[in-house]
Image (cartoon, rainbow, N blue to C red):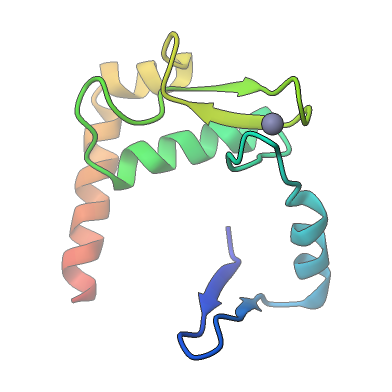
Length: 114
Ligand SMILES: [Zn+2]
C-alpha cells in the first residue's frame, strides 16, 4: 500500500497522502463500510495480504490475532477473523519459518528507523 493516512491532532481531520489523485479516489471507492465495523478488503487476496502483514508486524500469542479471512454476508467484501481454521497461506508461512524471517526483517527495519 502506498497510501498513508495522517491525522492532524488539532483538527482531527484525516489527510490522504497519495502520489496522485487517481489512487486517492480509487481507495475511497474501495473503502466500503460494513455493519460489523470491521475493516473491509475488496478482494480475498488483499485480505490475505493484510492478514500476513498483521501477523508480521505484531507479536500475537498463538491463540490471538487474526488467523483467516472470510467473505462477509452483509457487505459482500472480505474481513479478517481470529476465529476458525487458519488460512492456508498463513499456515504455510508459519510452518516453513518464513513468517519468523519476515518478522525479524520488520523488527530490524524498526530498529534501523530509530
Ligand atoms: Zn462485512
